[in-house]
Amino acid sequence: MSGANATATRRHELSTREPDVAHHAIAEAYAEHRPRFAGSRRDFRFLLRTVQAGPLGLDRIVHSMDAQARTGPYPDFMTVHVLRGRFRFRDGDEELLAPAGTVARYPTRPSVLGWTDVVGTMIRLPHAQVATVAAARTGIPERDFRFLGLAPVSAGMARGWARLSVFLHRTGDDGLDQPLVRASLIGLVATTALAVFPNTTMTAAYVPQPRQVASAVVRRAQAYLHERAAEPITVPQVATACGVGPRGLQAAFQRHVGQSPLAYLRRVRLDRAHRDLLAAEPGGADTVARIALRWGWASPGRFAAAYRETYGRSPGETLRE
Image 1: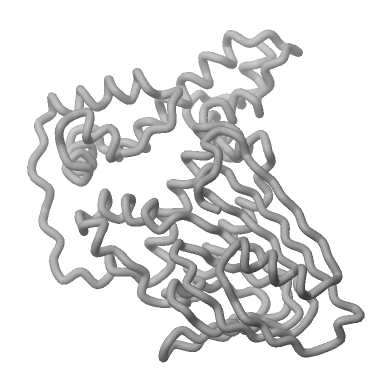
Image 2: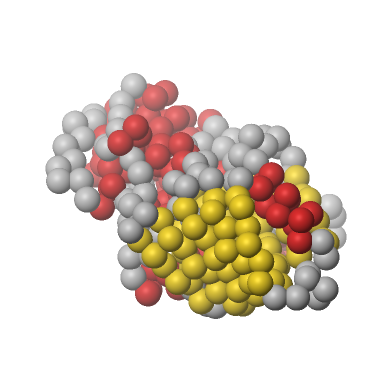
């Protein structure tokens, strides 16, 4: 399911009362499995709602029966936020019980999965996408990156991931269809995953310091960000265009600009949104929400807060004037 259309958001929903139909759908969507059921088939209810926005997948699943299944490997990064019932994962020597309100990462190896009358939401992202972000942030080669555990590193981190899951599943079609918003959300998921779930970036014994990058390279990167502000941009792309490594570029931005390249890019896009608000006709097709989405802001509230902090007024006041 990770090879999705790069522009359009795809949605699919299956609702059935037939357990065999349900588990064929699960196998097709995720991995082969051999389930055993407990409970009444007569009252069985299953719902699988999937959203594929480029490489980012968001799912909601409802399964009313108790079941246990041996599953095949699911090679990519996938988590569940349990809203009702509970999941149980057994991956080699590791066993994790995930009751309602908790989050867990799906095993990437063949494993045993059990669930009891569950409602849950899933987040999916290709492993390579997370490995690229890990390499850019830490310098660890992408081929050496992997996740190490199923549970978050702390209760606080688990709550943060649950809030992210709620936010992503509330993001509407308009947001996911906007290239800048989609790229921002993909980066947010990958970056947050590195902080929440145990992985090799947390256990590396030594990460070499990035080499010094001249201020002229930073100016070249700033020009690149201004020129490409309307396009989805990643730090590795900017670094490649400037002939340096991602970590070196980030360190140079902190040293010469006082912020990261992506923070600088957010300010550039905020300035573009300000320009569009000034140019828009009050009551016309351009609304504050539409302009915010155009420039990569999935949350109108966060856009309004950043705008007020920068310009001393709300975006709605600028638009009305």
